[in-house]
Image (cartoon, rainbow, N blue to C red; front, side):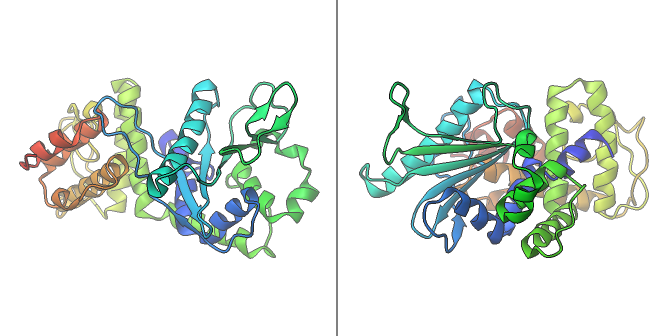
Amino acid sequence: MDSIETSAAKFSSDYFFHYLLHHCDEVRNLFVSHLSDHPILNTELTVADFYQRKENAKKRILDVAVVDDQGYYYDLEMQNGDINRSEMIRFFNYASLLLDSQINKGKDYNVKTVKTLIIYTGKPIRDLEHFEHRFELIDSDYLIKLKDGPIEIEILQIERMEELGMEVVNNDQFYRIVHMFSKNEDFIDHHDDELYTLVLDHYNKYLNSDEYIANLQIERDRRAYHTGMIQSRKEGVEEGKIIGKQEGIEEGKIIGKQEGIEEGKIIGKQVGIEEGKIIGKQEGIEEGMLKAKRDYILILFRKEFPYEDTRFLENLSIEQYDAIMKLLSENGNLEQIYEVCHIFL
């Protein structure tokens, strides 16, 4: 299994974390209940409707934004990379965006506290010596917490989870589920915990889902643009084989050395017609490649422009999808994308 597939398949990956909280209400409710001061009956995912539209603006996308049955907002995040000052700014920025969304709806500043949960798998943060750390507005001289502060952030440092002891983990459902993100595939037997078993079921479904295949493509695209052409070319061939098998390709198609890896072509002619390896049946390849490109573009487009109609993206040519992929990878704007589709604003 290559590094890209390992990254996308990892239990603690951002991709599976998003998949789980989108498909499993029980886990989402459990995480929110941990943060909340009141009983949680149900929660819903909420779309972040406050993306910046300026072409050069930093894109701001919440990991999982949730609202409970009493109108409280939560940001649930899986953080695998190290947390530094820029990451902390991002966490507070996301919480501020959820505050702002309430102000826009209510037309005043009487909004509810936003709470953030960050499950952090990286190396422990300097000066944070415990598994659980909660951050609120506080007077540093008198250690007085601001009552009804607008933002609360809790960080769980997975590498310090042994601080709890396995007895605590085994006896608390929330910590049992969080502990799973430290184990990856080496899970402890908790057959008596229906939610634990349900999470494992969702993990297996994720590994066989179209979303997993799309995540492999996203990882390849990122690697292609941030590593050299040589390494990208190798990984592109391996991913092409994986994706080709998923599409039912039995016998081969020549994968070329075109500039597709650098430009972010999703699947197809990755190492070139002259060097490629036949990996699938010729019959049906064009239709399969076009569908894969279309689905991948729709996923990326909805993340970048969640409120835009995507119907105009459904019946384009391979060349148009390639051009749109390049624009999305280079932070292109809507007008440029519409121009590619011959729809002018």
